[in-house]
Amino acid sequence: MAMKILPPLVVAAALLLAGCVEHETVVERRGPPPPPPPGPYGYGYGYGYGAPPPVIVESRGYAPYPGAFWVRGHWVWARGHWRWHRGYWR
Figure (cartoon, rainbow, N blue to C red):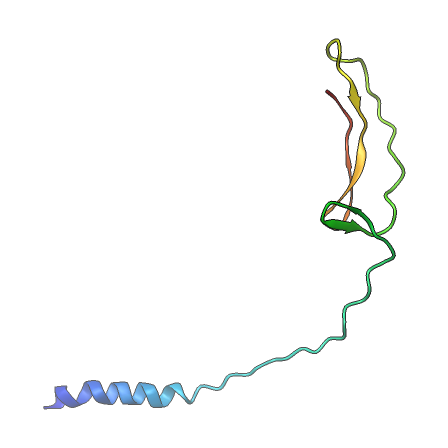
C-alpha cells in the first residue's frame, strides 16, 4: 500500500516545490544608440564611416607572363574598419 501512495506524493511535492523557485529578472535600461558618423561611403551592403585612407603605393614587379595586367589594390570596408586588398597580376 505504501508503494501506491509514494509516487503520487513525490509528484505532488515536485509540483508544489516547483512554484517556490525565485527568479530575479534584471532589466538594463540604456539610452538610444549614438548616431553613426557622417557618411555613407558604402560598398555593397555595409557603409564605411568616413573616407577610406589614402591609396597605398605598391611595387608591381614584372608581369609573370605576356599579356598579364596589373589590378590595383583598393580599400574595402570590412568588419568595422578599412582593409587594404593588395594589387595582383591577372
